[in-house]
Length: 141
Image (tube, rainbow, N blue to C red; front, side, top):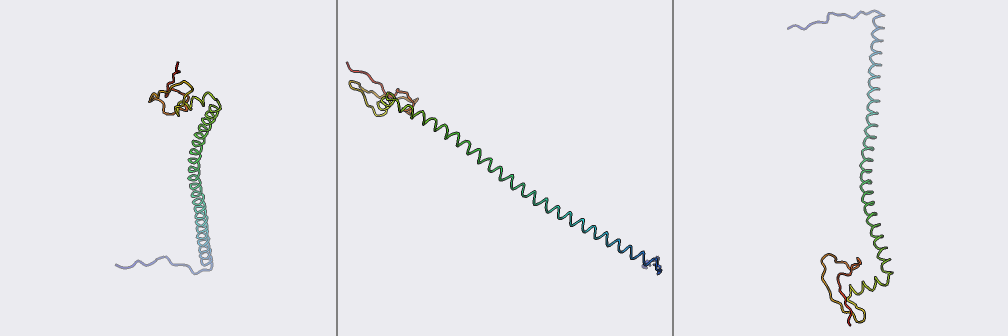
């Protein structure tokens, strides 16, 4: 096969040379604009990626802190319940009748002329709850 020859010839006139130089300058400006636009787009992409990563990191940190807050609130609620229970116990321990009943039930003490018979009770295991079902006392005649 034969090669096709270029049948278009360039004119060597001053006007043609001037237009060719203008065309090359426009092409350079177009390439410069495209590169500048690509650089701006790349810079914006990098900025958005950094901001997106920071937001993602902050969201994970916030979720962790929220979980810690829930745990701390639960622990605080439990501690408040414990403090309330201990305050009730302190109030009960200030009552002499309660302390006497507690000593008799826990350590099997008795008043003069009183006999203590231990009665097993499966419903309560803590004698500080105010129940005196663990002992039965009778007075001697």
